[in-house]
Length: 285
Picture (tube, rainbow, N blue to C red):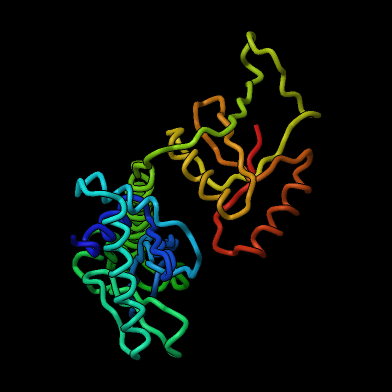
């Protein structure tokens, strides 16, 4: 049984895979940025996914069920094979060696106890499956000298800037489309809050300014299953999320609602102090 192959397939589909005794490999989202390569050129680094190991005690039941659907063997046999794979990693660490998972990276340790993981960013599998390519762009003369340029040079600079903006929009659209189409299995039911709009004469509850609620939103989907999956993950992190269905049929996952924007902003700052990587914002209708 090729456990390594199943781990990679499960990771691509679910963005995280847990192995008891090892931890959870998670795909962390990195925002797009522009890097200066030379005085006359820039590089657009698109949004990317970085593979990191989280040392936790998360259940590996999802991986077991995933393999069961593909191998048609008992869960006990699958569990034993995963245990053998995990022991191979632990034994390599205890002996002061690293353990490689082809295309993804390798497990290692600096003290033979605490397990670390480094991604193989140069792997063709990693680049084609998990990453978007960098884009090199020839830059016109520095923007600080715009006022000294001739009309032709100003036009050329303007065209280049517009091209860069269009490229960024295109890259962000691709990344959004990739996230939106992620498939999640076995969604759990969660409570849904439906917000009525002021333009609907048939509504039973009017949302007036004095009753307006401000929500801290951590994710927005046009697919309810995706919202439920994110809620499930947040509950495992000791949050109490709610799913809000908006008037335009979007499903937003909220970490709390507040009567004033100031209260919502204060709560948002507390969450970011605990988890600076969390991408959250304030939403109201």
